[in-house]
Amino acid sequence: MSENRLQEAISTLKASGVRITPQRHAVLEYLLNSMVHPTADDIYKALEGKFPNMSVATVYNNLRVLREVGLVRELTYGDSSSRFDCNTSDHYHIICNSCGKIVDFHYPSLDEVEALAEQVTGFKVSHHRMELYGECEECQKEEKNKQKSG
Image (cartoon, rainbow, N blue to C red; front, side):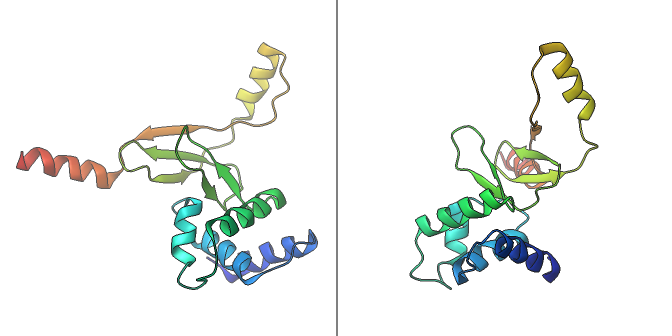
């Protein structure tokens, strides 16, 4: 992660009148460095050594503030815990059916699909999301190894 992105994010928070507490700074930095779309619990576990008095509620509160300011996206998938993504540009996710890992991938925006959906349904489209599901490379290797030894 570039120090630049962290400074830009901090500037955005300050411009929104949000106080930069040490915990908030740590949550933001962790998210900017994370490629795995962590849950609030993942973030809590990663930071509890550095902030022994921090609670899971503190992490959730900070994530809510970061989401409201537009620095973080909350990704919800069915019943599982929300995951958080600091990449707020238009991109899509591919999710492993076995281990739940989420990976970003980029594809030219689906503007045409939104326009067509508006024409066909009369809806005013606000946004869309696309998810693909499959087995990640690690899980594929694990499955092959199980088949060989079984």
